[in-house]
Image (cartoon, rainbow, N blue to C red; front, side, top):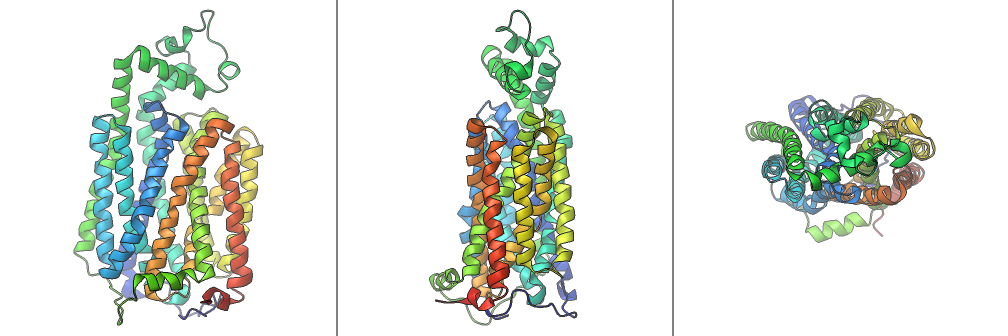
Length: 481
């Protein structure tokens, strides 16, 4: 496909989404999408867990997401250089090795109760995810006709939320019920003397109404844990060690699974898509790439999208616990519902892309996301939480579609480097949750959602520009001046 081809051209009826010769490589590569989805969504609930287990602020606990998603920014460009020098298959194998190494750092982090080792582990783990995403996305695009590339990527990306659901399910069914801080929360709510003793000293005439005195049960739990840490340090340390051991187990298991897939890729023959001519110098390719407005704007749209996605999924736990009074497990169940909606919507949107152009569908869903975010901010209790869940249905299309629009029509050497830029844009998932954590501390959880709302407005603008300019006048997206 040349750089002047239309982004919304009609797909020939004979164009196959996944040609027969690529079915096995496509299946193996698609498994990678599920594996990094697991890592993303088993990590999100840890922001809340670490806040309580380590007794730190929302801003500090948001460093989990900062460390996790800044690893993408650090390693995406080196991953692209590795692909240029070697192959997609080799990059995927390196990605698996780094993924496993980062996950296994949960062992010393939990044994020494060290928050910073956890952060280093998440950082290294996402070095591996950066290699996987930088290689797997363009690898999938290359496995068939250019005309069906965006649909093929949406199909592969549809399996990402399956991995995410697995991560959420493990967090909900294994981690949350096993945490002693969760039992402490239940004991505070039931006014169990063993727990309330840590906040009862200030109230000799009996405990007050939680909402009237503390604002939320969550605040009362935080005060109780803080005083336990001071007054009963051994008991607090024992609780902390237990809960960090619970957190450690799924990371050790996923490390073993990832090493198994490393073996599969090592012993299976995968397509190489070698070029007859060597790639041009990196600087020359980058210069050409940055002159293309659909790519430049796609990188920006991707950065704000990932930031919005991570804030919505990370702080749905905070919203449910602080605004509705849910337990961690109950709040995580709402998070799972959001992911189910995301998964179903991904398959529906993949089907709709056969009839509606990517830019138009992206714009429609981004505008809907703005509306639901307003509902999250303005409507109280479970109604606001429902609006927050519904945002996930709008987000399902966004990552692969922005990715496909940004790389549409690029020659292979530009696509490799372009993929790195789009994966580096995932750093939005590091910066925005950190900002929102600070907003929660200062403005409250509901008002903090003005931040992702602004992101969805920017995505809507990109979708409109894609539909009105890049798709209707594709020569603009290929300009070199």
